[in-house]
Amino acid sequence: MAALAVGAVLAVGPRTVANLLHTLGLADDPGFAAFHRILNRNRWSGLKLARTLLNALVSAFVPDGPIVIGVDHTLERRRGAHVRPASHCFDSVRSSTEQTVTSRGLRWMTAMLLVEVPFAGRIWGLPVLSALVPSRSWCDTQGRHYRPTTTWARAILLRLHPWLPDRLLVAVMDGEFAALTLLDAVSPHMVAITRLRLDARLFDPPPDPPLTLRQVMKGARQPSLRARLTDKATVWRRAVQPSRTRWRSGGWVDYASGTALWHHQGKPIVPILWVMVRYPDGRRDPEAFLCTDLSVPPRTVLEWFNRRWAMETTYEESRAHLGIETQRQWADPAVFRTAPLLFGLYSLITLYVHQNAGRLALSPRRAIWYPKPAPTFADALARLRQHLWFEQAAMSPEKGDMLRTPPPLLRRLVDVACYAP
Image (tube, rainbow, N blue to C red; front, side):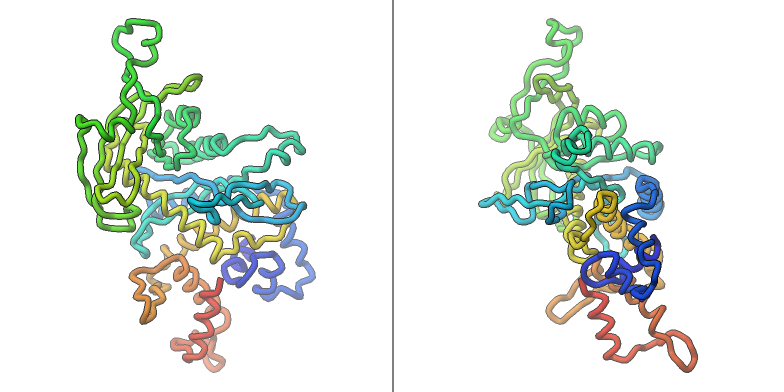
């Protein structure tokens, strides 16, 4: 598996096993089938790999303090009837406010560690655990119970909690995961932060002692958050965050906060801290967020939630640089394994470059028209590729040592090869 990981780092183009073997110089190896069996037949535990990766990332990037975990799903577009777990899903990348697009593919639920990477100076999303959300037809064929995305998110979060029993976990999710059953299941083990509908049914705590049987669970209903937007009694506070790497749009925001019991008929009752945000310049519509820990400061809730946007960058860079959507496996075990390994490779590359930043001398790729301020994942991947290639090929035939200053043409060729998708 280590050889395939090196091949996936160095390969250009599709991340098929055949292409990885060509990149590694193993095209004439008669034992090539053993590499295919790693994905489609051999027995090994992806959960053990995920746990090892998570512990290594936490030790390197978050040795103390809260651990912020982002959970979201993305679509890996795949064609062909042989990819049986695939289904037609909403395609957020190709959709817009005017048009909704669906595509056939594999829907992956991913948990990412949202941390600041020192060599980049910004928040990155580092995948630690990925799970396939198979189609309903595949579940029926296999005799399995179909589980929606909220159920998969709950399973992933409850799997991560025992791996870090002594640390405070903060689960950050989009509004799709603002489900009372999900929040009720995970809130005893971690802090959960999601979006909140402006028309959510919010209630006061029950009076003590309760006057009626109904008031045993909840008190009087509070005004909706939409009504609070125009209520003159709402107390607004102003905050500014100039850095675009922290808050998505930067600039001034007004926020109000409070506590309530969120309840819907037939669902659990969850105590929440709600935070409502409005934008004085009108650049965005008002938004609301919830936190299951009532003691967290509202500014901290906003900061933790805005880390979630790093996940979109990770998904895009994984497609652009690590070959997500270029696999061609048909066997179900290989389909279930390949994308999680590539997502994990993203985190592994980041970890290696972080631990060897001084030796690798990482710097951003600049041009006269693009004064890039800090390295990105493309720079980290390219520098790691350069390190691996020069370690093997750029040797002086006279002395057998590393060439300190490669010729200009060789530098350009290596630069093109290392930055190729």
